[in-house]
Length: 326
Ligand code: ES4
Ligand code: ZN
Image (spheres, rainbow, N blue to C red):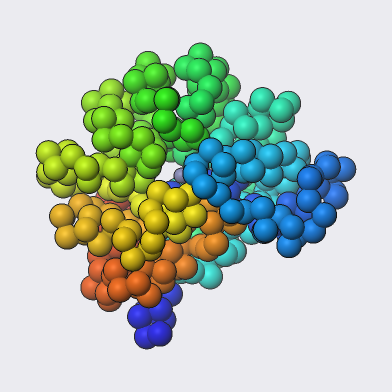
C-alpha cells in the first residue's frame, strides 16, 4: 500500500533489538556446520516450524539453544553484519542493539570474542551503510545479581564502547529490585540505563524499574497501561517506550494485532517507538512491525512520522546528532 511505501521510506532508529535474536535459520545452519555444532533440526524449514511460542519462556528456551552455534569472533561479526544490512534496507539510520554476554560466557565463549565480532561489524556498518550503532549490555534476570556484577566487571575493558546496560530474559519472578545494586554500579560508571518491564510482568515491575533502576527508557512497558497513575507519570516524564508488536503477537502478550495497545499508548501521549525485538524469531524486521499495525488500522501516516521521530528522540545519541536526523 501507499502507507507501506511511506513507512519504508522513513528514516528511523531501532532501539530494541537483541542481536542474538537476529540469527536467521539459514545462518544458524551455516554456523552449525562451520563450527561442527549439533542442532536439533534437519532443515531450515524445520527450524522455522519450531518457532511457535505460547509465552516468553517458550521462546527463550529456543533462542538460547540457537545462540549455541555462535563460537568465533567471525560468527558474531557475520551475525551483526547480516542485521545491519537488513536494517539499512529498512532505512534504519541508527541502531542501539542489545547483547547478552552471559549467554556466551556461560558456555565458555570469552567476552573478548563477542566484543571483537560485534565491534568490527559496527565499524563496518558505518562505512558500508552509513548506519551508526551503539551497544547495550543486557543482564540475564533469571541469573543472580552476583553474576550480573561479574559481567559488568568483565566488560570493564570495553566500557568506552558500551553505551548502556539493560535487563532481559524471564521477567515474572525476577523483578527489577533484584538488580538494584548492579544498576547503581553501572550508573556510577556513566552507563545509560534501560530495562525490560511490563512485557509479561505487572505494572509494579515498571515502578521498580523507574524508582530502583532509574531507567531512561522502558523496553516493552505494555502492562503499564493497567495503572492510570503510572501512565500519567510516564507521559509527563516523556519516557520512551520501545514497543515490539510482532514480538507481542508471537509471545501471546496480545491475542490479536487489532488489539495491540500501541495506538492507545500514542493517544495517551506516551513517547512510543516501534522495534523488532528478535526479528529472526518473530517474523519480521522493523518495517514489518510498522506494517502489521498499519494493516490492522492501528497507525496512519502521521502516527508513522511520530513513531520514527520518537525513535531518534529516544535514542542515546547526543542532542546535536539527534537534530540532524529530525
Ligand atoms: C527477549 Cl522478547 C524478550 N523478552 C525478554 N528477554 C528477551 N531476550 C531476547 N528477547
Ligand atoms: Zn526484548
